[in-house]
Length: 404
Ligand SMILES: NC(=O)c1ccc[n+]([C@@H]2O[C@H](COP(=O)([O-])OP(=O)(O)OC[C@H]3O[C@@H](n4cnc5c(N)ncnc54)[C@H](O)[C@@H]3O)[C@@H](O)[C@H]2O)c1
Image 1 (cartoon, protein in one colour):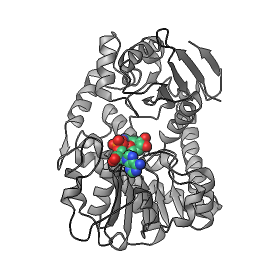
Image 2: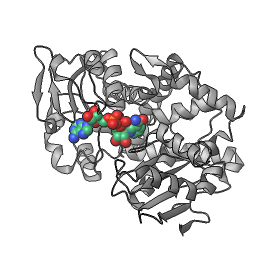
Image 3: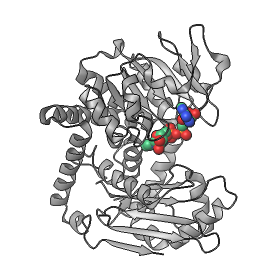
């Protein structure tokens, strides 16, 4: 049961919005705000629960950032609706008591951070992550300074904040390859989606020696069994993460985008939408490793069937946790606001965690998702025992559902 669920109705448009706080830790829960026509309380609840699982996964002894609880916001509105910005402002004003005290939010699907920042300021509200900044040991100003510096780091033409999530996905994939005994130099990968997550995952897999033999974007699938030129393709993307086909090399071929999961490869990285691997797709999949950059990329029955056939699925809340983790590490001062510090820290944590999860899954005969959930719960339990304030408001205690 969630700790708190709010359904809000906009007086002026009748549009609904939601906040779900799955649980609080040290009195705070973190998670993005999503704006999408058709978003439901159920979806927001699932995402909030996912944040609770995701936050502890890479925690280490001595970190200043001690994982918060999970939360999520949602507004059932098309982000391109001309009323979207005003609705966002009214939602934020209604949620002020939470934003001021216990709900640290930020961008998610359909909501850009710069737009959120502007709307909050215009409505006289604190920055979106204010509730989290309040716990930073050296204060909000220092946190914002680190954040500002980190946000402006450019790595070979791509801003660092757009790279860390996909870098973490690549590290998760490389650990899964190690676990399977497949050397990176002999491995082939296919990436679906070539935006922030897919683009960076492809870049860092290629830099580790993996041949990226397929990349799908909104316009189709590019395939080359000898490997695509990832660096060149990255620089040709438009604002929708679509590659310029004019730069293709001899040997690159264009295929229907649905064929991405049937290419002959060792690793599949779904990095576009949710629910892209269904039970009907399993027969077509040749890869022995799936690494979920997108949330809920694999449906439950498909994941079970893949497991039966010996294909490992590294779950979303582990593989794609890099962006969220890195951002809190920067804010709390656990990493320097540099690319080197970001990459070194992520790599040194993601690889052992993925090994631990896959070894535990093998030993217990359970799925990597089940093993990862146990790992996350174990860390939460250890933290709750260590920091009594973490246990003040455990999940379910005093659970409430409100209509605002
Ligand atoms: N960005 C993050 O930090 C982050 C963190 C965790 C999870 N995620 C999840 O990862 C996924 C990708 O996020 P992103 O930020 O990289 O998005 P993005 O908007 O930057 O990129 C999306 C990519 O998917 C492609 N695409 C769209 N429709 C497609 C289709 N039908 N077939 C193939 N490709 C298609 C687009 O062309 C683009 O290349 C989302 O599900 C998101 O929720 C993102």
